[in-house]
Length: 325
Image (cartoon, rainbow, N blue to C red; front, side):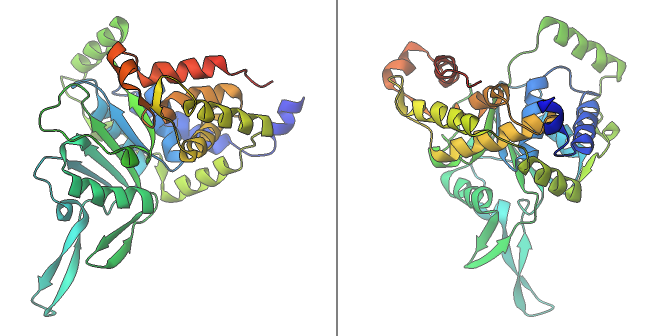
């Protein structure tokens, strides 16, 4: 009976329909990857950026492009390279002969959804320009600040294997990504379906078959709805305990910051709304915790040499903490 009372507090029908429509559109081409798609949609609803990591060929870029296509907003794609300069992404002042003065020509970062391929290939100067845009939702050029229009979402990909010609992303920048999603190989059944579907589409991934589902006003409305999702005090304490344990763990050299706690809270609320509930459960928190934390913590050199991953440490932490009832 209590659950029905909760469900009547916030109307989630439109949001759920939109989420279902996005999944249907993306599934026209993408097979499987359900968790990645759920996390990407949650990031949109929670106003967060996403880092997608995986070996070449597992549809990181394609999935990001398809998701962007379901949003009727401005989209730009930037291929990061070692010679990319800040002005290449943020824009520059250009002399206009007609007005005999300089005018600002916007770069590709002036968009709503920005897909950045191989983000770890650009040098530090370019990363710092991106860093301001991600954190402040603004760009400063020659002392003048330009506010970026909402929504502003960065979907970035990187290859974990290839190291030549890459730059390690600084911890402060990694901390600005709401999620880090690791994309693995598909199962045998999924790969069979991928091949079969590709054959039926005449060997093409035609993204023009993807329809727009959400516009700017919809996203703004759904984000407001997500902010209304109820979170019990004992679950707030549960989030705090998980993050606090990353700072008191013998396997970790660096724990997560309070920004991570807030990221778990906002993304768990988004997941709850996507699942048709206007209240957060421990399962919602568990679902997002690893994706929120694994790129914000650093292993000790000893554990790194043993081959332990940050994801495994986060899972161990979650298993040790008593789930609130």
